[in-house]
Length: 239
Image: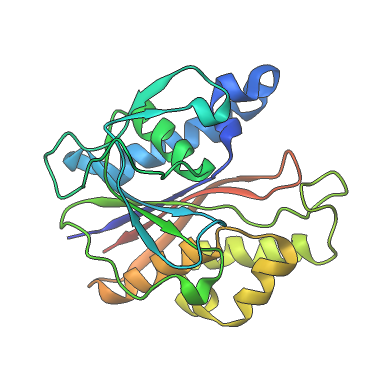
């Protein structure tokens, strides 16, 4: 039974070779994310990934090769990230699941020493995130998601008034596992206005907690916005 759901950022800057000279700036964020992936996997050694993906319009099950190339990020390297056949994951070298958040998930899983047993690409629109997932029992879940990208004039989406307040509400909702916040139709407007690409993935995870037994509690380990994007590392656990 699933009792652990982790949240980690979707920025490729978590990968030291991508961050280059700024790698040290993100050491705490990177380490916190890796530790949460390890925590989510628990004794199973495997995780199910729900990854934000602005390129999809519906929740999509993805195949992932056992060795994942980081070439789309400009790196001549591969990481061993996907299931070795122990579970229900489908493995295919021909899959096109190479969104940035998927590559970040592959890197984090390899750094954590766990494997991705199942992968879902989740649209930004929370209303299109799907209602249920057929996840193998005993596997932990990792949500790859970011908050707003409009917190400062130099942010990817430039400055949008209200982004910081939105992220404060987002962090509070993660901490309290506020299912109503993530599934509220108003999050569609927030996703568009503030460039919050992770809201669909969080909505999917929130709906998942509603389908599972137990009382869920949240903990936020770390938040930061070094580049005008709101990054968050957290965990949800079921008593």
